[in-house]
Length: 100
Image (cartoon, rainbow, N blue to C red):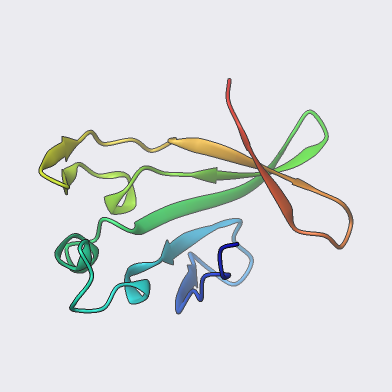
């Protein structure tokens, strides 16, 4: 079983905004395999909260805040809309990846 991630950086575009950014870079220490990529921004994402057909959704950008970059020796294409998560339940935060 995976331990929950600690997110140290969650920034909203403005206090009333439905968009912001999330960084998982702090999950990687200097001895980790992907530490250089984390420091280069590979685990930084833009997110947008919204509703699609009555269902709460979270839209995630690609890595590097949706910009292109190198990860594990491969060039990652820019993507402003990499995947969606569907949030279910009034107080639960169960998250399911959604493919279109």
